[in-house]
Image (cartoon, rainbow, N blue to C red; front, side):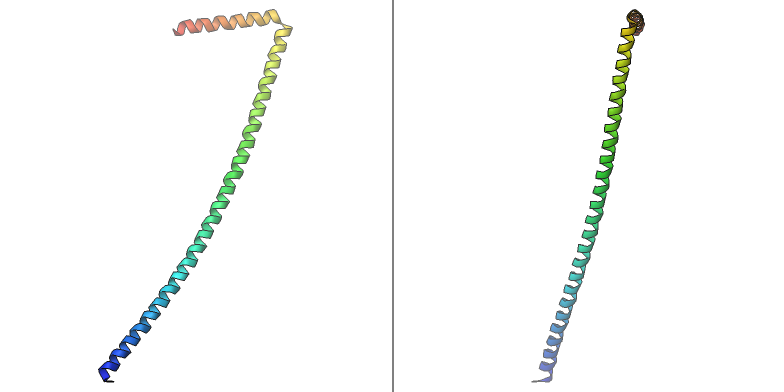
Length: 114
């Protein structure tokens, strides 16, 4: 073999070796990037799950608070209704006069508005 052929053969072999090394390095970089992307995805998923849990807990707390407030308001309205009913039963004439007075005031206000 001539020296030029040998040099060409060595250059081709070196080129193949270099291409193989580049391919191996690229595969290693790809594997590393894939692992890192998986780790990031797992962390994002974990944060999302914790945020969803927090939101769900807050919703439950607010829902319970709203239900308690509704029950309290309903009980208060029932107490007022019973109180008014008892007052009317004890003082029917006075209750009638109060209702008439309120009706007259509302009628005057309504007439003024028009």
